Amino acid sequence: MSTNLFPPRTTTADIELGTTLQPKFDAEGLIPCITTDHVTNEVLMFAFMNAESLAHTIRTKRATYWSRSRRKLWIKGEESGNTLIVKELLVDCDQDVLLLKVESTGGAACHNGYKSCFYRKLDSAANPEQAESLKLEFAARRLFDPATVYKKK
Image: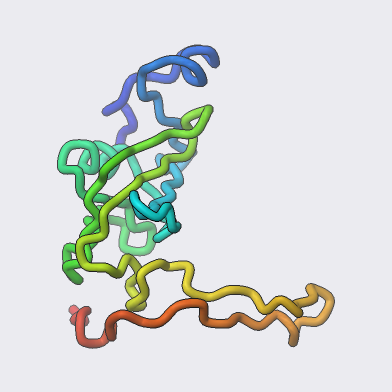
């Protein structure tokens, strides 16, 4: 997918202080996208976008990503009904990371049934020199059973 859906990147001053969207896609045509709840600022998920998914997101106000594993556009909620409605789209200082602030219509952004994809945390006693101590604890409760929502195709 071509990145020329967006203006070409120009000077550092224009990119960092200007008013034109000039996203920096990587060599594979992707840009990282952090997605947060627009009210609480809780991080809901992280994914990548390509130019097509970014354009679709801007056009429809529905969070749309590029699925690297499936090699296709992924409109969040198209299968589960847990859509993410974009309230704001922000870029970082050099326009190489996107931040979507969204309203989650289904209450769960994670395909594993949690509100956020970040539903586990590292145990406070973890020590990188002791592999057995690198334990994850659940920090949230599951809101739905993925087996009943996602149908294998």
